[in-house]
Structures are given as structure tokens and as C-alpha cells.
View 1 (cartoon, rainbow, N blue to C red):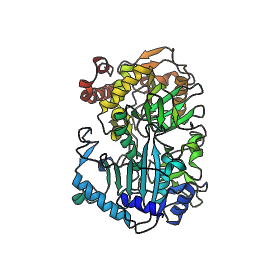
View 2: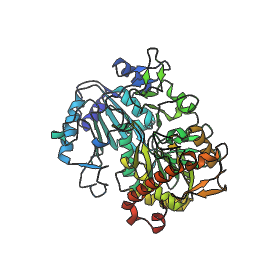
View 3: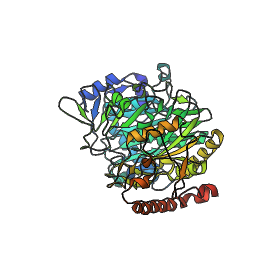
View 4: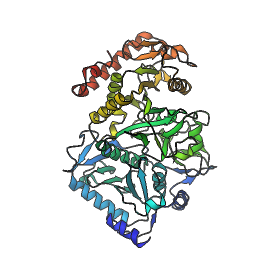
Length: 527
């Protein structure tokens, strides 16, 4: 390690007593990871890592430091749980001491494709494969940019360090702590790589709205004629799958900003769910996942190095991380214009919502604030089957500011650019979870293709009697009965009962937003 690098680490409070590897490329990181026993390679050269016992995010172990400079901004509550500065200081000091005694891997990256709004991120980790994950998921600076790189936020990654609730104020031995004033993300006691990615997304959700940019939990792609589409949704609802379209170019699969110039990706890679991944169902993701440089997280591999994407014995939340340019239709530079289509994805566990519906702008605001879906098994610790949830802005776990901040920005964007909004249900039909079945991916793709191709702009619609949604009566290549979920149930009266139950849940959830929206938005929900 060069003398300037020593000074850089000391600047962050790390007096390294071991080797430090700075800004290594993927091949070097994989070589170190194999040598250190952090994982193995598949027959195709992808790196396989196991993160047990944490195979999903730990939202109950996430904290935001209560600091005078930012305290009034934060949406305090179950999402942003406060940690006092004294506990944070002790935890940070102990983590720095822990890291100082180990070989370290440092990676400098950008978060944000638009140079006007990007944030400089420095990750410091004792693990080579986690550093490869950072390399995959964020944007690599140019060589000349690295020479003068000044980190805006620091990730202190200590997956083997166990927090002490009595000393550090944590709830368990795991702690994910964000300090916006100190500009530090501290991750301790979990090997799950998604914590690194989502912590920086939370940072972007704090910084960018203050600069007039709407931050969004969505994927984005663009058609041959420059038409941009956004797909909002929680993990497991289809953001990555539906945006990875061979006939459209991928801007990004999970996190984006919407500025006065258009849409831009926060990331330089994709983090796709890999359970039941096949070459037929998701050819672009499958191909990208079976390459040297890709990471397969918690995927079971046989003795010959062949991955079994159908084996969920470790977790249903198996993942694939790879650079976005592994998708051969990715947009160079990760930037595009303003969206013409906005899709809200929900995995409806009740099985009563239609598979596709047009939304008025008032309905779009209602459903954006509601953020209804079902958390899919494995995406969080303890979730073993779909769990009904309302997640504001389709990303409440990552919102440091009040949901109304993001909703107001969406309303302003819709007025300015008149995007067509849609609700797409990728969840259950023919009955609720345990009785019915998931929507067929082929049917969902056909509906989305028709929508993006303009073939649903002027079709006949029916108004759903409970939810008030405008549902196409016919979509090419999709059986008509699929479009009316009530017709897919063996007992229509049972659908009526379930629909009324879900409608009541919508109304109860929305009461907390009613004071901050117009009467037309309040009236846009279920009847």
C-alpha cells in the first residue's frame, strides 16, 4: 500500500496493521476471494458465496443516528429507528479497531449515473467478494477520477463483528447504522451483501430530494423510439424481470433518479432474484448470471460446479449480482429522458386485483402512497411466505424522509410530463395465496408489451366495482378471463369477500395520508 493510501485510511480512523488492497479489478478480487476461502466458482466462472445465517435484509437492526444537523429531516418511527450519538460513536470506534487488525479491500465508486447528482462512495471491507459486489453494483470511476477521488460517504463493512446491545444500543449482534451528518454507513454482524446496496439507496433518498431530484425504487427501460418506462415495486414483484426485455434497452433494474433532464440509474449493476431462474423464462438474466465476474448469493451448487437455481434450501431469496453491461441491451451511461409509462407492480396475495389496469393521476398518487404488495419469501429475515404489506412509495424501508416528500415530487412530475400510469398485479389469481396460483409470467409479459406498444391506449375497459380501476376487456395473446380476477375464482362470492377485506385494509392504511392530499386523491381508492 502506498503512503498516500496509508494516510487515506488513517483519515478514516483505520490504522491498518495488515495488507490493504485498493481498487482491485474483478479478476484480482475473485482470486483473493478463492484464496481466502470466501466461496467457490461455478463451472461457468461465476463466484458463489453463502451468507448464512443472514440471507436477507435485517430491517429490525437498521438505525439512523439522531444528530442535530439532520434530526428535523428524518421520518422517525419503525423504519428509521433512532440511535443516539454516544452509542454510534462507541460502535464506530469498535468497528474501526476491528477492521484495523485485518487485511482490507477498499473500493471507490460512484452512486448515480448523472455527473450532476452522483455521490462518491468508498467501501472498506475485510472480504474480497463483498468488494466485488460493490464493484458490480456501483459505477466505476475513470482512472483520472480515482486520482482525485474524495468520498462523500463511507461504508465501514464489518460482517464478522458482533454488536453488543448493551454497549452499542443495537437490538442484536447485527447493526446497520446510517449517520447522515458523519456521512458513514456502518454494517456489522451480517454477510448479506444487499445491506450495502440498500444502505446507499437510503443515502440517495436523503440527499437527492433536497437537490430537486425524485429518488425512486424502480427499474427502468427504454424502447426503440425513446419511450421510457418505470417499474415501481418491492423486491420479488418483478422489477428486474420485466425491465430485462430483449426488445427494449435496460437503464437499470432497481434504483433511479428523475431530474429535470430525465431518468438516471443509481447503480452500475443488477441484483436479480435467482430462484427458479431459467434460460427460457429470463434469458438475459440467466446469461448474465453464468459468467465470470457475476456473484451468485446463496445459490446451491453441485460438486461439478453446476448451479441449481431451483434449490431454495438455503433461502428462497437467492440472488445474482453482475455488472449491467452483462445485459447486452443495457443503455450506455445509464441515463435517458422523461418516462411516458409508469407501472406500479404489486404481488397481491389476496388474489383479487386485476393483472393490469389504467390509473388516473389521482389513482396513481393513491397507489404510490399506499404501496400495496406482499413481501415475498426470503427478502427479509423471518418472511417465509407472502406477507401483506403497505410500503409507502413502494420502498418505505429505504425512505429517510416523510413519504409525502416523494409523493409531492411524483405529483409534480406527472403534471409536467403527463406519463400514463398503470397497476400490474404479478401476484395471485384464481384464489388467494395457498389456493390460487401466481400470474403466469408469459401473460404478464404480454400485457406489459401491449401496454408499452400503445395497443392498450384506446381499448375498451371496464371499471372494477370495488377498486375503481379501469381494466382492459381484451389484451392480445391473453385469455379474456384472466383480465377479470373474479372469473378465475371457483366461487365468485369468495372473491367478493376477499376484495371487500382488502379494500378495507387499503382505506385503513390510507388514513395516515389523508390530511396531506387533495380530496380527489382521497377519493381515488377502493369504494
